[in-house]
Image (cartoon, rainbow, N blue to C red):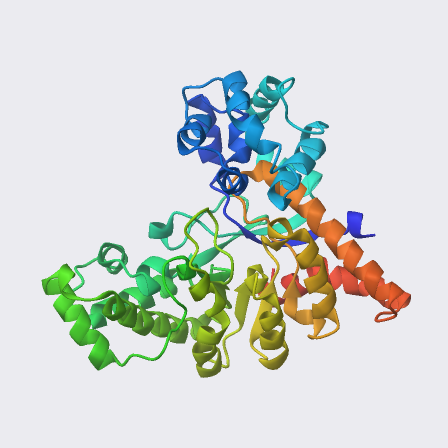
Length: 416
């Protein structure tokens, strides 16, 4: 049942398909591309020297040399969630069990051959059984990817990073169509962006937890205006705390404006991608800090992402208590598949089950989404099986529950 149920995919970072096709024409696409998102972090964590890492992902070495560079470290990472995702994707796409010295050139060839018009749809709909995908662009300056291609398959987030939480005067000015000379101008730019894209966007998304805390305490227009005025005269005249204070004001303004469009708000919480730079103290306080805006904006539906790993038990309490808090399991299945399975089991006996979305691949390379989706299906199956064995759910409830978890909840919530 689970293997044939279609997913709603609530979070990907896919570039436009045409960009992948154009990149292929430039050459230098090889199997290392499949290691370039998330598994690259595990390679560094496993001890891969930075020089070897840079050469592996660079354009000079051939596939054979690249395999020799990566193999000592891949053997220690192939069992992580990221490594398993790669292997499962290879199996689904090309019936290859794993990349190794004997087939790395073949994988490179297959990777190049399949990049052609329509390959996104083929991978996502036919091979992965995904009905709809929500795209969060990593080109943060563009705020919203106004892309008319495949609207039946893709929706797009509206990004507040560069116009609010990590505000950039040049981005705000471009949207306003005029120079930013005051806080009012910044507010007008945000309002203009939402007027332009609020009806089209699937949600608001903010990833600022990578760079700052999530304590969006209220900052008055008067106080924010004074700070911005000083900044416009001399960018170096304000502190980080003052910069964040203006960001708080702009983000709260964006939230207030977004209520006109009934947009849910997705916020990155928990674990951060990469290696050797995570501020765990800040991560631990994500949920504590978010309580102010969750309480101050009761009519906004907040989607907290990635199960706030490793603070996932606190997220259960938050989602159980606050009616406007929802949970997205995107990325989590490959961060820690065992914990994600346990989290889903706990969620289903703790929180109303309409408040969870169970899959988002969170990938730039489309080729890795099939493996992640399979891991999610396996985790959902394990969770349901355990709940059945423990008599927490009844067998006659399973079919409807699976349909909601994998598709129905997200379809209804995001109105797709």
